[in-house]
Length: 129
Image (tube, rainbow, N blue to C red; front, side):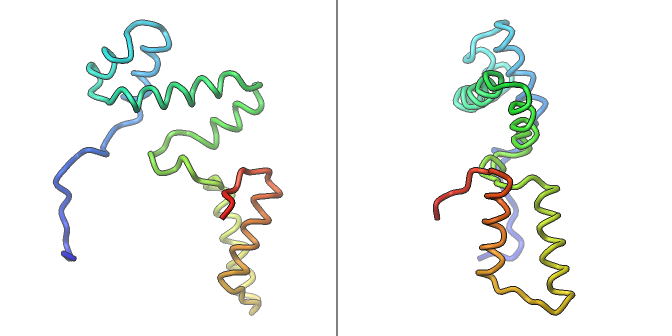
């Protein structure tokens, strides 16, 4: 593999502001999904997926919707399967570091079990594997 690979495409460089503007246009019925995708240089499937997520958040009650919006803040396309928020992940990391500093080292499997039990306490959806 090349040591200093230079990416040749800008395919994944989509700003969230553009996506939010496109979602607002479609929600306000200013444009169709196809016209909005063409205007903002986005794909129709991306707009449909984000609209589906946005509309499912609106159908929930407000407390659950605010929690879902805080969790799925559309930071990047890879954070959609994330279980913990940044704060929860930092809290988990500091607890593991504290255990290590107290000379109570945890194995990798014990850390995974600890994170799984923490996710269950927070009532998060966890994959089966």
